[in-house]
Image 1 (cartoon, rainbow, N blue to C red):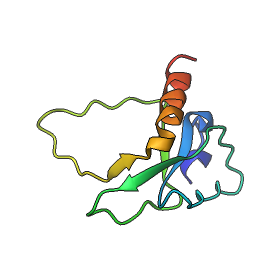
Image 2 (image 1 turned 60 degrees about the vertical axis):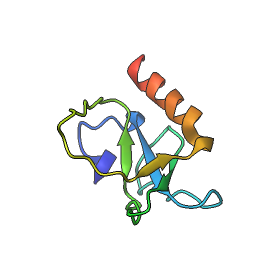
Image 3 (image 1 turned 180 degrees about the vertical axis):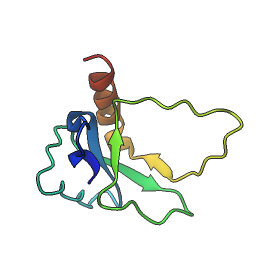
Image 4 (image 1 turned 30 degrees about the vertical axis):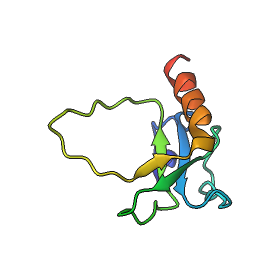
Length: 94
């Protein structure tokens, strides 16, 4: 259900996807009203893919503690870095 759940602010979310620079992002779910452009990630060597329904929520910040194990899934495409920053600023300072 993702952003279609009651109480979720769809305007704070964007599609996040992986693939080569020429790949197209997955389409939003039927009835999903996303206003932010999709963000492309270049996968790390051990990562496989993102589900087509994967979304990034810019409305919530999560602190990552130094003693927490994390997994490298990849890096935001350099072509999408400014877009990522813009989405974050928009969500945090509205």
